[in-house]
Length: 276
Length: 290
Image 1 (spheres, rainbow over the protein chains, first blue to last red):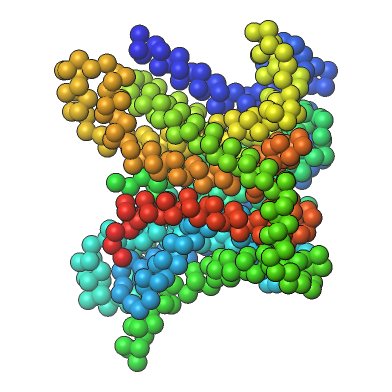
Image 2 (image 1 turned 180 degrees about the horizontal axis):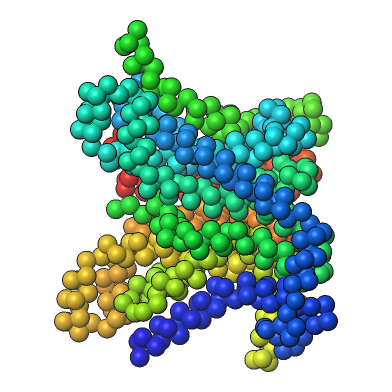
């Protein structure tokens, strides 16, 4: 009895969770001959067709949006791994002057939301010429650099480094390792699971980021997927078949990656939040 | 020479992050305050205007409206995100078949971008859309989910909660696995009902997690922006406009950077109160050793 109730509850929840996407898919598959506002609504299209997808793909440069999102996410991930693991090493393993101050300065960045500082960050990217009106490269840099390191990543890596026993380091130093080779040859290989977590966490954030790119991007060819999709929503204001098709197209990469790496996704998202 | 290197080493590792954080965090943070005392009517030669941005801000009915909306958002979304994911986590955590599939499906909205989610829900909320059809089945009149000023903000809240269920469910699930099983077995022997078991064992054990969820979700509710931008643009009649949306609009649509920065400072003060709670909590749990 209890079991049946649980399954009913979970099934309703599952419908609520993916229902909106399925309804979008259904609308995108309906041909122009079919009424998308019919009462009662029709979930399975009578004559499913991919025409909406083809038309949207041909009128909006989705492949460019995807490429831009990939470039931005990829470099954001690489820089986050690099910068946070570099900074985390001395914070985890060394004693030096000003450590406390640096630690608390990094910690303070958690307390201040990006939305509070976005205006001066915008002015800063203008001053540094990191905008797409200068060049596409500068545009990418402007999208990537402000998010290339954060407190979460530094603390995540620091925790992982702290868990590595001192004996391993000491042995490496006796073998002639300097600080840098210790970091590269010992610490990084031993913390691969944490690095994967950081990569996925960064990916999810960067891939779906909307506010920042919508502030600084001026050229359409530089749009990332969320910005491009929002733009498309504006162009096809009342054509819900096209809007739905565009939204479904934009979901394909993240759903694919999520399906392949689901285990890491589910693990990564709660790391840092729960640690007892 | 060697010892000199030793002294420098830690700083060399930190410098790259330090440069990035300085350029895109510490300097902008200070500049927010400076900007809030300036008028940016002419973007190339801003004037000092003292407190006049703040006076304008506090005299602006729209500002108070957006502040009210932001708090309304927090006070409705946060309790929903504390309770619902906990219930879901408890159900999913049972020893029954297929829970992994359900976990995956419930988590799916978390990874999809808010722009897609906003579009999907906009379509559901459409005036002749599927939701109005569903309520017509129970003889209710059609509702202007995103067009009625009394309702729009609540419709957007539903999307925020829907998008967060899976994330907070996972946080609760991770915490549930730390509760010793023999507690439940002992309660079984005493003949406790399953509701009582959760009230007397699960909830008290999860207190720190519930605190964590309430802090994370309130800070993120305070910053709500994308779903509003995609679904209502703050309308109708500013009824769903929140503080971050207001800052965005004044700064990047009206180019009134000084005024928007003053609103940003207000947002900072409010989030700081929540964030200090956050840090106190995390510090207590994680950063005991420096």
